[in-house]
Image (cartoon, rainbow, N blue to C red):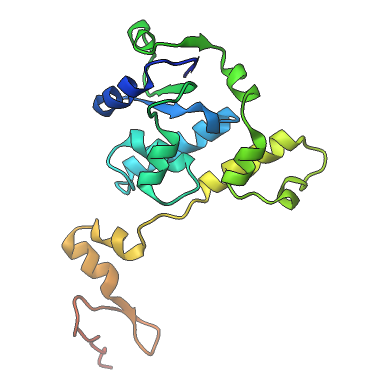
Length: 204
């Protein structure tokens, strides 16, 4: 991870990042704690390994997971790099090299400085977190309560695709077996495959 301020070439970075295969630039305005990044990247890796990503790559999946919205276009627009952004977080799935840093025309700063500049009121509004939720666990600071609420929403974000879409990713025969497994009146599972198939009763 690497945090930058006063970035002057965000427009060029927005174009070049499209060719990246192992790192993504995140809009630092929406990052209050590293747990957000950890939760989003973990979910992205799990989705990739399970062949059920919502987006085309694990990098854009990270951006999508960070967003409370189920709109892929909106999520990438709000959390990715775009023209005019001056605060960026470089998230890489490998060691960040000097060459990577030199591509960003800005000041490399400590990660902690990014957290201090986060607009908590704006984040609360963006993630639609009510004041009452932040008061749960009164022994915790408002900042940690907000982080907890945001991370919970990242972890519990509903997939865009329903069960039927997930089934389509299975092989044809396997899908038919999943759909076809039904119970008869006696509670026995029949191995009905395809529409119109009927369960055969066992003769006594």
